[in-house]
Image 1 (cartoon, helix red, strand yellow):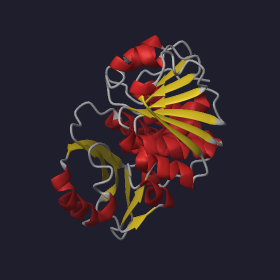
Image 2 (cartoon, one colour; image 1 turned 135 degrees about the vertical axis):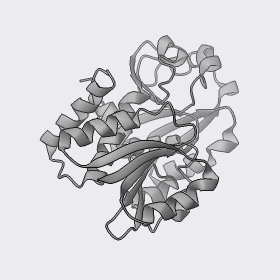
Image 3 (tube, helix red, strand yellow; image 1 turned 180 degrees about the horizontal axis):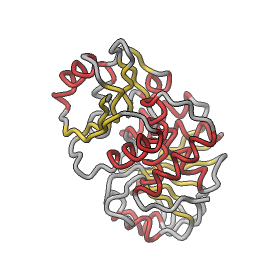
Image 4 (cartoon, helix red, strand yellow; image 1 turned 60 degrees about the vertical axis):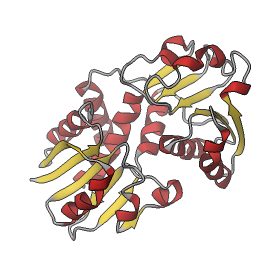
Length: 276
């Protein structure tokens, strides 16, 4: 029985153990998946334990997504570009590979809502998940990116990535926006923490496009409740990024049928309705 875990702090609220355990039971793969509370100063010791054997891999959440990057033996092109990972894959020799399936999570959630291409994207925030949102936007064909946040200075890393990916970038501080700023935006991804947009609502307005709000606890967020268009919670993203992690940890060949079965099972495991 191989081990796997989700690493983060705090971690007690995580739904990853339910999602992963459901998948491994369905696939009949012997992986025991747990949640481990881990602070940044414990990351090096955890990496050493992974190398010692008996591990399939780990999911990585806040505040560790960039902490583990320099501890990897190998990084995917995506992680090198974003500077953040959410997945550690352990091979048979104990080597650690960093991957980022947050991008897959965003793309999968949006595809379920019928969004498979887009020319314009608005993102709220500028953290590690924003980087994943921009990378996902590039795969959707986005050419026009608007970044909305309180302090424009914090958008430099996100803006540099977007420009590298061929996007035209516009950075706007919340205080400079007119009321109803997002009303006409076709696709919005909020990467803000829970309650992070609560005092933004009068400015942002009740948008009519598709909103993916990566926060999901508590749900619905104030932003989601005020939205007039289609809304996806971070749980949709969580399911799809977990499906890709399951593929990487299990070694199972995921054809379209297997991926659909696993995805539907994970949605059902947390009582979530699958769009589409």
